[in-house]
Image (tube, rainbow, N blue to C red; front, side, top):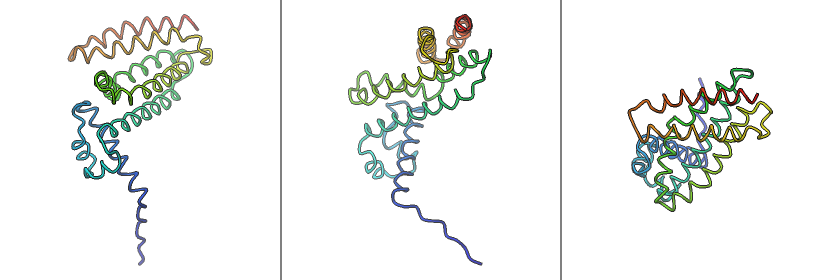
Length: 204
């Protein structure tokens, strides 16, 4: 009986696997421990790799976090595109879109980005890495919202209402950060959601 040995990974494949493991671990640490708690030692331990591997791929903690930021933006962009494609047509679309938008701004990836934004205020190196990624993600979010809400095919005529919706969602999503342990965000979103739903339906 013959057995076939599994093909050995190439050096490039091993590098890619290690890099991906470090980025996954960095994102997990950012979500669980925040920016200050995302140390290179903790990331290496979570990824199951040596500090030498981290130094080989990223060199510094700042480089690792910058790469993790880009990975975070890409994952959020892919998430947005995938979920928008599943939205129904017809009357239920606006209501489902509002719920989907709220979920984007109340999940762990959003709160990781909030923590990074707060840290970037006093960290010029982090701010320089974060700013272009945030600008790109804001453009992507607006584009997806046009697909979600604009009954005219997304030509931008609903932009004012969309921008107001985004500002409302972002503002309310920050309440759990400022006032942890309360239901104020959910309660105020319930009211805001009803007003926004009526406003969008009035434009169709």
